[in-house]
Length: 147
Ligand SMILES: [Zn+2]
Ligand SMILES: [Zn+2]
Image 1 (cartoon, rainbow, N blue to C red):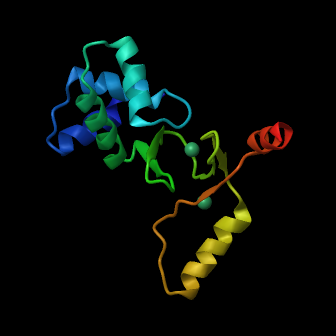
Image 2: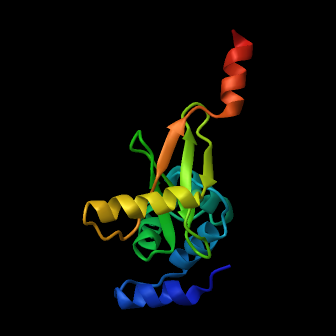
């Protein structure tokens, strides 16, 4: 569980108001496992704190991304999911385009090859985000049993 300190420090540094609402949203989101749309996060927040507006939730999530406490995963259809980036190691994602399932993976060979390719092109890497997309095993099984 993250403490409020890093968020507080960030908000203060950016001269942003540390409101009770922002902290509530941040704490709830950062404790939420998995990958979520803004809409889903808003609904989860509203369950606990009915008076929070949608815009406040959306802005706070963006803020958390800027602070490096949350991570935005942009999908190939240009929609986004958000996940907590606190105490998480690097990982990449695989998306099922049928059911929307996001699977996390890390592969040392892929990581190493990316570094190697970057070097070949004279790039110094700051990071990367790899998204593979296709059909997951469950959806493929369903499709073949339907026919
Ligand atoms: Zn990676
Ligand atoms: Zn993830």
